[in-house]
Image 1 (cartoon, rainbow, N blue to C red):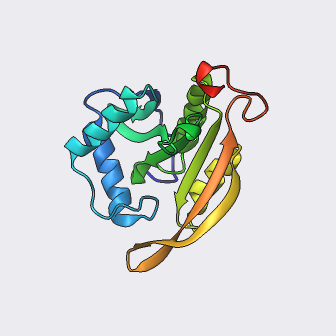
Image 2 (cartoon, one colour):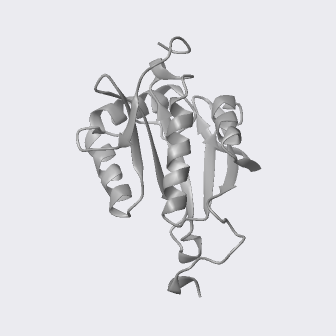
Length: 185
């Protein structure tokens, strides 16, 4: 399926029951890739716990579904937990290996950006595993992210040192105006 014919898919909020599909996609990327710095794929129950934690914060967790199967997912999480970071999120996007290069990641990230901006967040950060992860870097660039730095050799996976590429984009008004909340004063 990878890199071939178009896949018809729907984008929706992740729902209970998606955990197995999400866990399978993530397990592949943990075992084979460098996009995640985890080295042991988490159990389906752990994926469910993580998903529920994201949703409990009111943040979006999206699924791309084709023929009843989750073929990609994306979510936003707090960039950092300290209060000064409260308007900044970090994105995560994973696509099934047999469904890559079909626009699924782009569709997921574009909707995630839209949803996070509508919630009033002002910045989104991408922490991309491996400076050779050209597909993820290009995907983020196409959707308005700018490379802001590289953390050389901060991870060690698959027998080698791995960089993290930091990218960022404004959401909504970004830093052009102050947020309209009492907490920001």
